[in-house]
Image 1 (tube, rainbow, N blue to C red):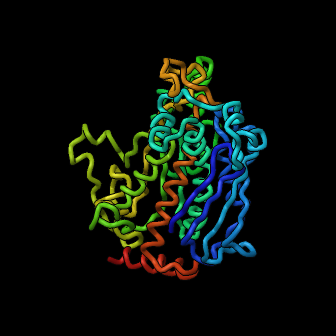
Image 2: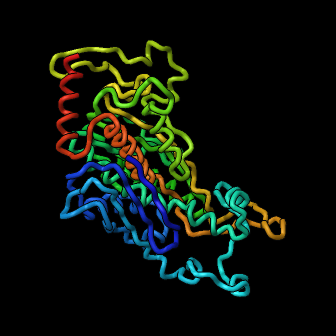
Image 3: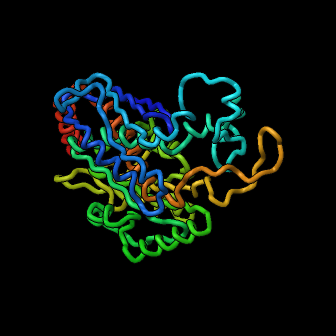
Length: 388
């Protein structure tokens, strides 16, 4: 299973091609769109999310509501493109018109791909960089993850997410899986504790008023994933490593851990390793889950917990110092429309990035030409593992 995305932030559309989805998975555009709408929400989002109405069109790979086993093409139109026709057109323009164009960017924003991308690809207008490096592309990744989540649901695997921290305001409560399952859509910051959520909103408001931005931490939980996905035999087959790479590739994500994560640096081994137990009903299980569902790069049957840190968005309304690439003079960085905080939306993106990696591992492990075959194989494997 693999996917490609294409499209620019203010171009006509985002396009996704997904290859490797089994035949006979029930799939509709409405099911994908409902996940995209979650990404658009969240306290602290900017005006762009009020303009866009992210809906998916399925262009190939699905007939009469079921996948065919062939590549699936999804399209998400950019409604804002109509305001950028002269700037983001694909046809050549003459040199005089190029010089007269508005929104040419020569002052790179610290923390963005602008300057390094311009140097790498020899662009003199840094809009050529930021249009593709923009987090707008994460809408396409959520669309991919939505398909993956539907596949996993057929196998009894559930994926949920929540916000643990925004701008230093932390939700430090311990929650059960049922708490997270029932509460992750409770409010517009996706924090389970409403009192903490209100403090997060206040922190976001203060950042917005100051022309600043703030980041935070999110948690993704995978429930009922079978033991044995991934492998210990080589670095690129370790599933926790794949998940870490996928999460870090999300715009503005700078840290990832599993289970107790970085807290393990201060703990003795006796408080980190998860003791093993067994009963006939569920087979082997762990008495704790400090390792977040992974041992040796493989799932161990416990819930997978992925913690990820998002840095503050680097586009600021009170921009930091920069240098004009044409004059080499000091200037304030360019300003683009942005969010003061996108952590709640980022938790949705992270959830779907993890979903893709879990689905990919499942499809690598089991025969999966069609869903009936996959469902049977996973059920037989679960029974075998329980009886081991």
